[in-house]
Amino acid sequence: MPNGRRGQLLALGLLLLALAGVYLLVVSPLQSLYAERAAVLENRRMLLPRMQAAADELPILRARAEQLRVAAGTRKITLEGASDPIAAATLQSRIEELAASVGATIGSTESLPAEARSGYRRIGLRYVLSGSYETLVKFLAKLEAANPPLVIDNLHIHGVLRRPGTPASTGLDAGLDVYAYRDGEKSAAAKQ
Image (cartoon, rainbow, N blue to C red):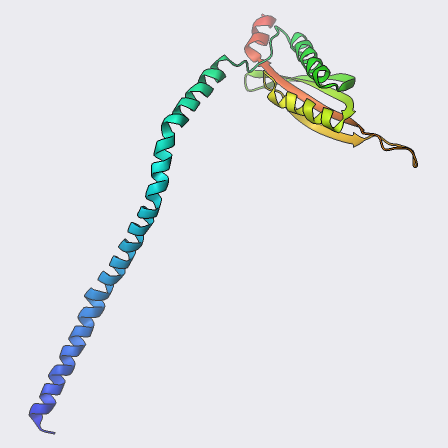
């Protein structure tokens, strides 16, 4: 092969090698960047209707939050009573009202020791009560929605034992601890 032809092939090879290097160093990263940007743009296009829907709901949500804020400001969060025994009596009468309203029968009530908790006094009562499944569920729902808020702890529900061959009883027995809080500042002021 003549030298001129070999030189042209060598020059062409170097040119192709240089083009491949430019492609690897410039074009390939630009293509990757373009693909990433296209994916980001597509994600933003898909997110736009959701963001618009959320923006449309924002005034409604703000109004609802304001209603809840006003309602929370007027809601009692602690028991009334100048001392722990008075607050326990208030709690007991409230729970008896709730039980009577759904038809649950209170078998026994036991007062639990009051405890100081972060500026409040935790007042507790232990109950044993009976009723049907529906009655107990309604009673628990009433406790959950009570004002001031009540805390249910140590809940045990047992079916009533029956002799073999007798009809099944729909009655259940339940044992539970119910706690409420009263302002601890009142107890400190009452002691002085």
